Image (cartoon, rainbow, N blue to C red):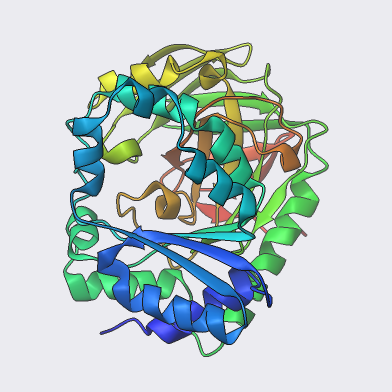
Length: 362
């Protein structure tokens, strides 16, 4: 089984980024994504726009952290800032050589660099952007699949196995719009599952229909909870791998919107370092509900796993302004709670997700 890079590139350029003539499109990945990178370059040029390909080498990031000095941790290259200011769109393609390549890097160093790059990150997020993935051997290994099975999983998650992928994304978008109509009228969300009983307010906040235009694959609706509202406990049973280090069995306790206690069965050092990044790191920036039927199991990629149908995810750190969220932080870390076995999410007492299934309105 193989993934058609030209069909994938067309989906990215026409549906996700909506590339127009004269635009400058920054494309970031590794050399392992060469088939897709070349297809995207062709597709962007066919639309009379400019592709700016940035393909990193194996071990490039590892060697950067080994060689990093204070200047690299506490400042940003002016060329990076200038590029972020000039581009019209950004495409990031996750295609790892080694999903655990950064496991040995001191989390405190990454935290320093994240703070320094906050301004550049905000510039990039203000542009049209999309994040996606290309299947690699390392990705398949992390997912616990054979390479061919992983390719099939990615194809289904992208809806590239459908006769008309763009129409399929339109159908999911309509389903999510109906969910938003229900959620927008609610004030209180309650999440219940094993080890979890958390309430939070979404009063006055806007819900966003994430239907593949920002992340591909996508399939979620999300908002920014009221910053002082989270109360209770939540356990995230699906492992998370920020910065290449697996963090599993995360348990957080919230009081008046802030994390007051936290532990992880694995990767606790990373969890504590992330929470200490800045004042906003202990506050929720996002609540999301996954809906993608093609994502039926976690693969160790936060960007994909959070879209899994029947799950809910919460992010500590930065809010998305379009939701009405106001939390500011150098981090945004999504953690995923599985509701497929006895879990639920209710809005003002009415079920929205029950045992992993979206409850259709009457």
